[in-house]
Length: 132
Ligand code: FES
Image 1 (cartoon, rainbow, N blue to C red):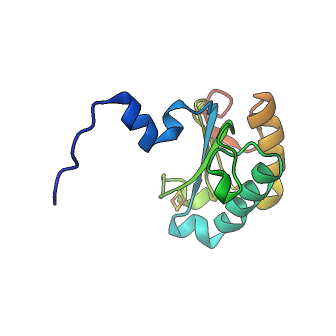
Image 2: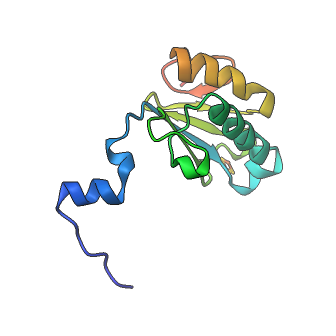
Image 3: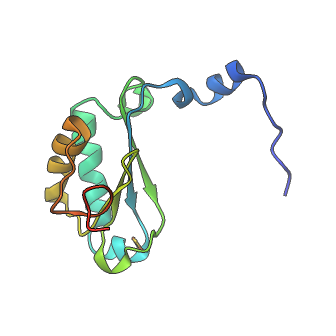
């Protein structure tokens, strides 16, 4: 496997990866591992996509219906070890891990946590407000 050529010029890096200078405040990961997928992770991700897009707060390219100034990045992730209590949703920078998230919980996570900074304690298992 070839090693990628290292780019040191910051201006060029930002041109290649505009997210580096975007006003991103939070990153939401939705687990798409096998166990989470079996209990509704795709529906959870779709609901995040729908509401974040509707509110125009999802970071991304306008050609994809997203906002280059959006404060929220939404991505999938692989299994994080919450397999028995999925779907797992992780929110950073707070490091809150939500368990057993269903599509109907997503609007509360967005309005409470992403918009007001208030963790949804009833779903949080790891993080400042979780039990760990
Ligand atoms: S499959 Fe989602 S935490 Fe393991």
